[in-house]
Figure 1 (tube, rainbow, N blue to C red):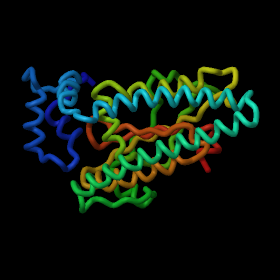
Figure 2 (figure 1 turned 135 degrees about the horizontal axis):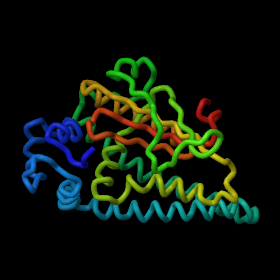
Figure 3 (figure 1 turned 180 degrees about the vertical axis):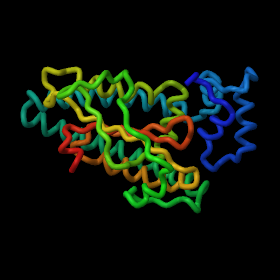
Length: 273
């Protein structure tokens, strides 16, 4: 990985049915400002930064919101460890109200994503949960699991992060939003690690000594990419609603057809349920 995209990689990465190959090639050469026949991260950032419009304020607000929520989660933990019953009652009410407001905002964004996706690929828009029968049809070939990025640290038996290989699971269309956020250097690359670090750093009062990290990598055929993303979106939403799921996130690789889903669970038993 040299941090650059060739024309073929660019077309595979950004192909979502909106632009055809010829239009993507034209866009590639527009972004390739130094005429090297490669597009690097800086060129991508510069291009999207010039076309962000109102999304610049949105993404900046998301970063601020993320930090505020992390602080609130630490506060909630302290209240439930040493606060009075009244303090716990008030904090629980505020937490639930925050969740409702956040979900309302997310639902609006998801509705817009669904509408755009359906308009772009009406024949392939087929929401629903991903099951084994569908997965067997969609995947060209399964990709073996391997340890997560070294930034998470090496796996140690009995403590730290543990990796597992679950049944084939899914990623949602939110990856499109995450991709843009990553390009401008504001969200995706740092949010997950910062989140986990903040929530696990206080080992003095952490209930469990480790989290189970489940990593699942999937390769999808171009033919079924649209319906795959629709089903994966439903899966992510379902898993995120599980009480014992600490965090769930997904990444779309530059080839445009490979997806990696990370799930953090309190225990292996919770994940297997």
